[in-house]
Image 1 (tube, rainbow, N blue to C red):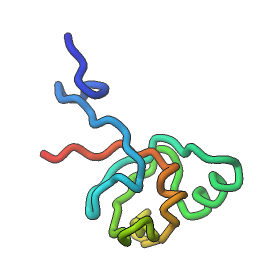
Image 2: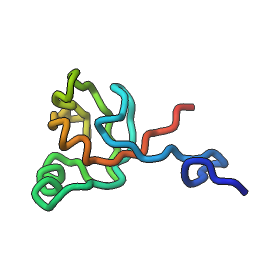
Image 3: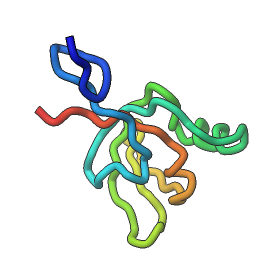
Image 4: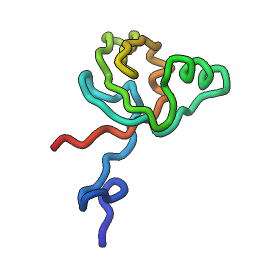
Length: 94
């Protein structure tokens, strides 16, 4: 059996993780990792951004501006640099 881009679930491969900054506006996914230090991890945890949490990217500004996401039906904004440290597995589009 071949693997294409990740684990199989329902005989379909899961998407490879991308950074939150790379996620498209309106796209949802699950946080899989935070690649930052303790202070950044604590800050993101306080906002509800933790591994295993489902999030949706609401919008992003051009040229490395803030990224707005929805977590638990609440919109929060984080900087582009911080968004670049959050790894997300995008949901598959049916």
